Length: 132
Length: 326
Image (cartoon, rainbow over all chains, first blue to last red; front, side, top):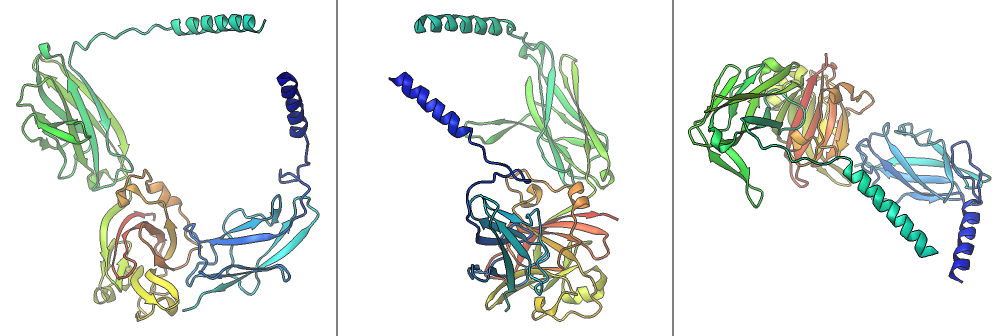
């Protein structure tokens, strides 16, 4: 009996393990998920420490904006942004290093693409600088 | 059937292990029959002028062959004042403490040669050698030849190096008071009155401010920075330097921080760091953080580490490494 159970389990694992998702141009799996959102934003300075103030980051899903306040004196030309995305989603443009957020009149925009690559949402990052 | 297969497999494995393990038989080496020596370099990190390179030199011969007479080090470039060899042989006790036993008279240094003469009857000893890096070694290589002699006329030597000596300078524990001016070139502070005599040398002003609603606290600010970052400071127009500064955290240089972490800033780091896109001020500096900086004229680059910076009052202690890049 044990022998049969073991065989069935092995076959099941092989079948499940061999289920293939296609891979996109970035080498990421294209899955069935339709979720498409940014759940959080962190901004790090050149020293890899957060430059956000104690005010919470506000994500408006209707206006598709992310509002964040950074500390007085923050060097906005050298910011490492970190986005938390829905499962299997990806970001465009990719974050590959420091980002220049110093042009506050022309806020940066980032597009989230769902796991199935069929839903896209473009968020605008609105940064304000804390004032004394 | 299952047990039969298992038995056959076990026999094959055992046989293969025996075959492999018997292929190289270990032979107990012969005991030491003559004077021998060994040496390790104990200090780590870049070799900076004014700093020291530390070695532990061990020498021994069989008890019945005689005793140690002298130990000697020849440095290819004479060490600076303070270079010496210990006249105590160290061993580590049960709780890990180094215990020194005096074996001779204090070392004598003449030129590049440092020597200790044994005055006790011993056949084994480990002596430490401290080489203070002289100015003339800057940017060059230095090597060492350790040697020992025993009472039976035998002599041995051991070569160490060459070791590259850094071009950069290092200064430890510089005290900064509120509203003092700082020169990277001189690696020192200036009072406002002194700074007024040498405005071209001033790269930034250290200030501490507790401000409502923002974290300003400890700050390094170039004289030409926006007045928002120089509250309560009036900088004369003769101060024209805009010093680029990039804040850094959690990469404490071991020689500056003197902690256990093996991170070292060397010439190459200062040569390669690019702060051209950095601001000319940094505020809210914290202990164990620091900055990479470049003087306005591009002649010097520096890494400044913050050894202490109390959160509630002015005053800071920093240590720095600085390289002349052109």
